[in-house]
Length: 303
Image (cartoon, rainbow, N blue to C red):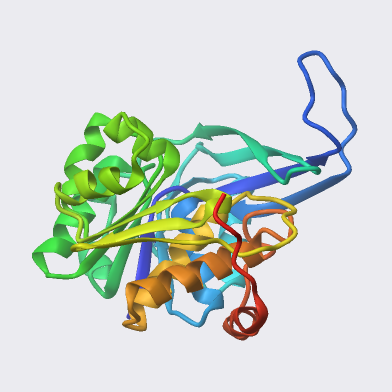
């Protein structure tokens, strides 16, 4: 039924742009205020949908206005929501994101007033109707169960991970593609040698390991092949959701059966375009926009 199903957190993001990041006890007037859908795997599904891929999302919301907003945002982007679970009396996840206008960097404050998604709340047959499963780290029990189902069927599992958690180590061993941030790599391996870190992570089971490096691009490893793919030069407005969008674009490249370096270049481009607008989703491009960007884009010099 679907090319990709995402499983994880879905949220409402309130995004405030400030002229500078405030100090404690300082009062700063926001220059802009926006509201968008958010969440790691959720935003990856929106990215894939805009690129023309059939997607669905499985997660949990509360029966509140925030949850209804999440559903509306998914439906507007043609992401299937038929198996999102609603918790009666729950408060859906929301985040307030402070964006520094000068640098485009952000600080995220978030709240969750719902319980975890459990394996019993998921429809196994529905989940397995997808070709690829994309996970974030926010529903570990459900993610471990779903990854097991997909692995038993010989289907691909992609994991987006930022923080180390003892519950997630088994999940790392069961995925085909792991995409981690610099923070995850430093915490997981206790070091800053990213090539060695990718090798160590790959030894646990993932066939492909990708480390997102922000403005430096990304490091990719598959088998004995390892390389850094530089990011692109753009005027950065906001980095919110940059990694989430990268993950969606990476999965798009996998679906096209591209070579790893081509996938990395495409993913960097999609993430770069996203950074030119406020929020995790407003700047997500459609495929023709990415193709046009790649014809003239200049890679950043190594930092």
